[in-house]
Length: 89
Length: 164
Image (cartoon, rainbow over all chains, first blue to last red):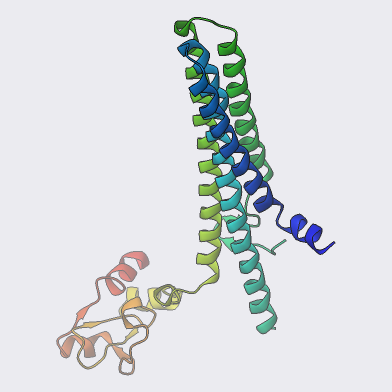
């Protein structure tokens, strides 16, 4: 239950890790598929589905992770602002 | 939700608003759709010449999604930076603005100006250049002139121009 709560709170980081794993797997599968294919015309679909999709998911992971960091900073600023307003009353 | 901070006309309430969320999510989805379309299109061809157009489409999808993600992060960083700037008091910016009384006094020439003993210029009391220093008591402009001081170009000259 505690783990589930943590996942709910850190959904963006959990999704980022999932996207990074998906990107790494896509790159690996693309590389394996393309290396087994002799015909260049048969390799291009692997480049797209493995290489480009892998890059997409890695980019998505980076965006989500950095977004999570920014949300943390924003929440910290919320706390500071509330502390300051409490202290000046 | 934070109560929000006034920054001039801008108001920093949220890290990202709904429109930027929709724009970024939409661009990401379009990027992914282009990659999928490129994959499907390239898979149906057996000659490499025709596949390059699909490959280019896929690259465009990646670039589109990457640009959307980068803009999203930059927008967030800007919002955090603006909010931090509004919350943290920078010493040089904590000064009071030149008051209307200062303006009037400087414009009429009857006002009291301040300067420390070693200063070569006299200032209106709210001038940035005397904040945090311990200037002598206020004195009329004629006194400072006799002491060989010039008017501060930042506050006195500007105040006189503004008062005219």
